[in-house]
Length: 487
Image (cartoon, rainbow, N blue to C red; front, side):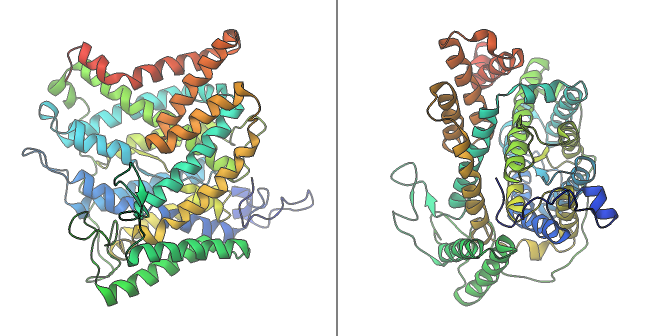
């Protein structure tokens, strides 16, 4: 489907207007340099939260095991690796998708791996490097791309729709518009919307919606900037402070929109090179290492697949089989990003579904990724300004983009149970389990079960069989480890 700012594709008479246009195929994809720049900036602002969250997660000490650097050093390393890899995605794959440290994997590192039998952060980063190398080999041999192309088209559409619901839920949860309460989720605080931050979120959401309906260029970026300014004004007057579930339940989420001290500073890249490739084997043993690497690998393997399908569909960049352009190049860069994140001491870098916000703003080429990457590199020097953006100012973009991606649901044949049931499972499991990988895995298994029930086992691609087996192992990894006697 087309994004709100997308004009009709150019006619055959249209021609590139310069070297930049020819290199990125900007005119060919129905975009402009201005749209690519706006899209790149929108993507940066919607995922810039990682510059705050990743240092907070990876600076957690464990029983005397020190982190690889201070929060400022981890933030600088996070921005540096994300910037370089996102620029590489733009130049090599020419795809509007940004990369940064993956939230799921960094949490696994900080709260599961580090401290396990004395495993250090450097040991855990070594596991990330090993996982990235394995995935890179799978890409270079054509295996990862072959698995992607073996997925039926209706499941690819379902993945995109499911991700749309997922990122909309992320936006609502991060802004505390919905929270855990008496029920698994409830509206606001005690069933009611309360606090100035929620008002800022609603302001941003409805501003973007109004601008979108009015077909104003830059609607999402305008919404983020305007909401951040409003948040800063509110904080300057009301002094709300940071969110705390007990002490301050109506405070700002992620960061307080106030500038303290100088807006610029010199970064320190002290985390780069801090990894131990084989140190984990000495700590937990080879069997545990194999299972841990498998867990990391499967999440990386299929998360990117889902993300690039969703972004490609949103930007009308998929071919008739649901494949994005330059699939192998996309997967190669993503694999290298995992290695780079481990070697940089900032966790595996992976593709971000928030890139869909930039595509919703009109981005269609790798130029948008280059802009996002440059913004990450610049953020190393202006971290105080970037960290001013609270969730309440950035997440309205995710809700709007979730709506845009949800409209693809009409491409699924809901009258055919053979198609609809696996698609439905895929769609609901992403937001309900809070995981793209879980949604893809559940959809794959449901697809296989439906095909077996209809006596069509021979029609299932061998790689889909393999993927389902791997997902069954992934879903039951804890009892498997218990059977093997692994902690």
